[in-house]
Image (tube, rainbow, N blue to C red):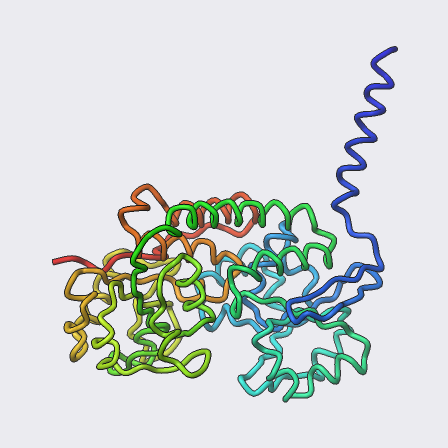
Length: 376
């Protein structure tokens, strides 16, 4: 008999601890645009402006990240078909969700979206100007549909955990959100602890989407956003930050050569483009395919004159990490590439595997997410 009250107390404590991480509606939260958003009840009919954020929902709605979606812009299908194929095989109903499209000018099939009676739109902060220009935000406001901005691009390291936390509150998945953000912060701090005292800071040039338009084009990069922000977040100097007048842009190969980078990194993916000569990182890719693409890239006119290429400090990684909820894996690859002596034991591929298997139910594929170019 004396055990009974103890069990009752334990049950009460467990109930309190779980309810502490349950959202009580109505709830007001601050999004990545600094705006306060009030949700009267748990959203059940969601529009996803950037389809890559289905991988954020996979951290939260683990059994089925698509179950709330009524419309989305299926960017995965365009930028990373192997991942999309894995997900649609696991959740075949996803193929029936309206692909609303979303152009750089904010053009979207708004009528089809509104017809689905959404109760929340999730959008990337970088898309806000296009959403304003296309009249989408005004239409959502007229209809009383909240728009929640998240960010994994403009301030990737600061805003990714914040965005996951905000979505966890919005979707009543706070405990799932906290589990991932705790993991994220632990892995990031492990990087910073080893890099913050390294002097001088390595100079890094990162060529985003290298080879997408063919091997003749060079050299598109990021400043203080995306890849540039991630390079800076691991304590290195991002060459693009000093040279670009805006957030992103092209720098001539001659200028890159003159800057004498210590490390040269390309980002690549399996884009559905006839001109694509990028290093094909992602699922269903072999190391031999990656090595061949690296070798082809080395043959670009003048490329061998880059100091980092001469010194075998040429690397590449999966492009979508620049705007991705699992960008902690991209940060680990950057750390390993830029500071090889400090991170001999670091295994970013294992971190990716742990995220997918521990925090989601997305099938784990086989492939290559990052590598050093072959050294000869």
